Length: 292
Image 1 (tube, one colour):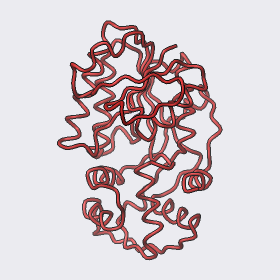
Image 2 (tube, helix red, strand yellow):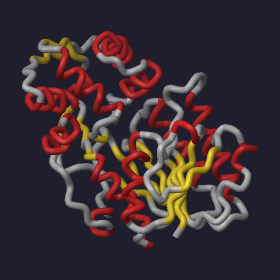
Image 3 (cartoon, one colour):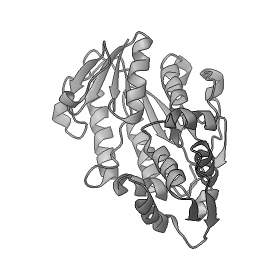
Image 4 (cartoon, one colour):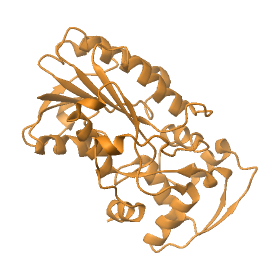
């Protein structure tokens, strides 16, 4: 099977591509700048930009399945509009080709919750991709723990740099983080499981913690003890500026993420566990691997 990975240079894509190679798939990495990408042995590279429809001509020729690991946070301009454009161009470019299966990694969060722009955009991309001529599998995840994860970088740097934190209410929000190795196992597993075609699944690790607990537990692993003092008047918007002062995560990425922390991100539908068995990594083990 020939599998294309859109977003091969991103955090998840960099872990997924080598794993697909070990499963004897013929892997094609879709990148915007081929000169800056050093692919694993055996991986083909195609250069195109999902925001440029013309550049996608012929990209999907001979491709049987694809992973969509693309988001536009951190880019110049309106990231939600860029997400829409990229998803629409992707769908249009696959029409008339042999692409029969697409797997999209989306964001976890209740359907009825008041979603942040970041999570709203993920939902909108799900809807756009569902209009393709292929069978779509959606995996929704909360914070992914691993070296290179922007969300985890915020948690780690808060734990490292602040022995005393005046914190917003979102530190009490529940989250179900998941290790990058487990995410990759699910991504690969659903492609080999026909029953997952056309379905949406929620994925998470074995531990449910508040964001505050994640910061404190990460601090203990780093031997950095911290104390938190929650302040009700510190809103997510204000706390986004507070995070700017403490971490080196670009505000174009950090702010949409922080505004989404008011949303509870816990798995409520675990059907995936019976279809794709994965031995889930405990939070502390995942953090230890990420900071090693």
